[in-house]
Image (cartoon, rainbow, N blue to C red; front, side, top):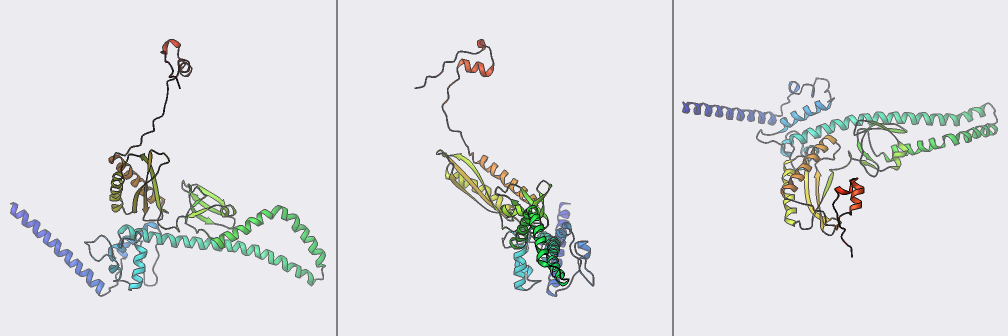
Length: 389
């Protein structure tokens, strides 16, 4: 009976092996002959191809579906869980394949994982979407500027119109200049802010719609740009509240554009006793490096001692680098929480301690105890103060 079961399992395994071999031959035949396949049924709404035009991805969910099927189509063999440069060269020329591979390989480890593919495709989709919104806002701002300049040009032309009818331009100019001078006291600040906003938006241009930014020197509040107008910029705070920020004020504040930044690094410092050996530092680094090698969100890590400010204390500086620019705050928060938990566990495993320095003290006298505790004098024992020299 056992021999029959073993023969059945062997035959089943042999059939599975033959099936995968045939599947691999079919895949090689498709790539070798460059057959054009339509993944309409598999992709659903992610990719819909017709004879006349190809519809675009219209949501983040569809972008993830597209990335999933791109990964499974580009991967050369089922035994690997990543895509290599040679796999991309089956579909594109070498120069274009290298550019495509560099764009999809977000963590720069020489291979494209499923998460790299998904994040890259979603990033392309979001950039295209934000670019469309930016162009829309730019047209709105340019339209307002066109109206303002049109009013100014028609005002100048109005003087020429008057000259045609033999109107005294000198008296007219004096009257108009008096009115302009009177209104300038009321609108001078508005015109100044308008000029600063124009220079800030069209010359400096520090952000686009959809960019994640930090405003101010402290950089504690994270905002996402929702809409850009001529005088104000609408920002979405990390807690979901909508903030209307004046452009002239933003011109004087420090802006950190996270979306345009490279991979972010972060430092976590811990004060430890001076007696902590350097072997403990190496042990902490080795334990955290195990997590960084297994995590797709952490790229590099380093642990080094520093000055703790106290002669009897060390500062253990733990530095790590993310594989992305932390504009995705959900992914950033999850990756940061995980590595902080790992650091906490590594410090506990290495038995790292921090003890408070000893400080002299003396017991309070009977009268002070009675005042603090509001107790009857019978309940307080006699305590003699320590004489000071």
